[in-house]
Image 1: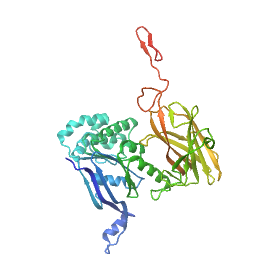
Image 2 (image 1 turned 180 degrees about the vertical axis):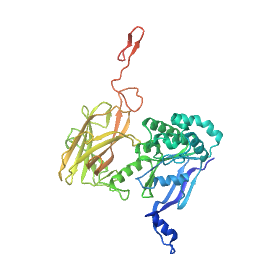
Image 3 (image 1 turned 90 degrees about the vertical axis):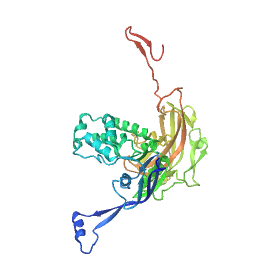
Length: 443
């Protein structure tokens, strides 16, 4: 029986010696005074981590935050400078592309070589090989040296080996970013099959994958552990820190408490969600140069609504208050499900609409008119934002998480999947007689 924790890390630190040139390294080796010719770089700084058996944990952070170093220590590729790391169970890893493969060996030879590294016997690998070969789908290249493989072929084979050696712990470091879309879907299906029966440690910049797969999320920044928590909570905080340049002391604007504004104030014959500025919360962030004061969702037929039907014409109102001039405003929203996965959304740039500059000390009303898509019946949260700049480079002035919760209702009694297809019909034709038995869904 395995211990309660698959991975235990206590006080993990990892430092590297950075030399300015090979000559500096040579000088240090022969310096009679034993002077130091390098700078210390701290990749990890006192990380404590306890990952329970059978859970999937994600590791997120900006490039250079220490994510890959953490995984390499877990896999035993490198040793920590300080601290202890204990791994309980057989581990399989997908780190750098092709890591663990000998480029001179054929694909077949590397499969058995990787199995030996994972402590899987030759006889067992012989039994697993047909499944690995079929999953990788590289055909005759299985008997060619892997140095001749494309990056996609290398990734296919590496992933196929990792998931077929029945690891107790599966470690993946951004490896699924390589490969065609079909193979990525195949990999995601395989990964989901590991949930609850194996421990997974996943590094990715794909926040939807984090929200879908992970039980807990580890947030690293500058080699330090910022926070561990539920996926939605950590992803929201990480998004905020991404716009503000780091996780330290995030700015919370005074807009967390919704109140009801009368119909005349709302400007649409119904009620709107406004914000009481007497309390400070962490549901919003930004510079505050322009703020969102009210929002409301209206059905064109039913007025202000908290529940919508797929295919219904709706208008989303956003009220803005500017404190200074905003030359290139961007206003947009995102609709997310309960897991925090983005379902749809748009802004004025995606709609090819250039907004006029916002003048100081003015109030504005922005309207989005659209047909609500026929997504599955459930509750969804709308996040809203106002920024300045363009899609690639912009300054976030105000972002509010989950400002409105909307229930989506369905007209169709039976619905399969995430999206309901409108105006779908079917037909049956008797081929020999050329007679239509069913046309447009009617007998």
